[in-house]
Every structure is written in structure tokens, then in C-alpha cells.
Length: 106
Ligand SMILES: [Zn+2]
Picture 1 (cartoon, rainbow, N blue to C red):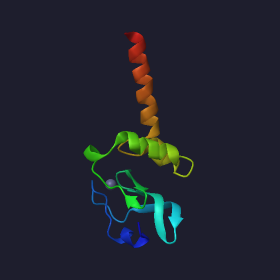
Picture 2 (cartoon, helix red, strand yellow):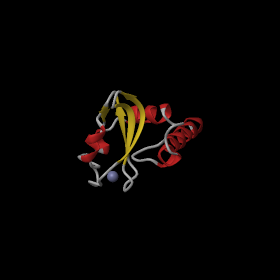
Picture 3 (cartoon, protein in one colour):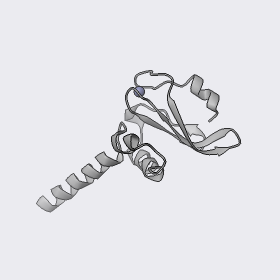
């Protein structure tokens, strides 16, 4: 995406504006990989192959979002990796723990 797009992007959940941009990979002046952060609701919106993925929670792909967090976890603020919404790697860890407990109970 182009940086100037930031001037028109708002969080789809709470309309917060402007969003915080983090750039991981650039091609010329285009952001290829990055993330948009909403400081208000703590949601993150991945930028993948130049496309900002800004969907409401119900349309998001949890697995792809978690893979994205895992891929960039060393570049992302800890607050996003562990407390980002609608999901984060700490939630994922807890979920897996619960699943394990359930399967050993049965
Ligand atoms: Zn928001």
C-alpha cells in the first residue's frame, strides 16, 4: 500500500483515525509487508502483499492472522503479539492449553 493511504484509513470497528503504521518490507515507496494498529481498540490489521486487510472481526481469518503475528513477532510490539485484538498469540497459547486439558480429561 502507499503511505498516503493512511490519510483515509480508519478502524472499521470504531472509526478511530489515524491508524499507526509499521513497515516491515518496502518495494520502492510501497509497503509490501506491514501492519496497521488501532490505538483505541488494540486491533491489528495486517498488510500482506501490499494489501491492507481491514475486515470486521467476523470476516477475519484467525489462522492467517495468527500466522501473521508469528511471522513478524520479532518486529511487532509485545503489546500486539500478546494483547492484540481480536486475537493474539497468548490467547492462542491458552486455547491450545485448554484443548490439551480437554482431550486428556476424556
Ligand atoms: Zn479500533
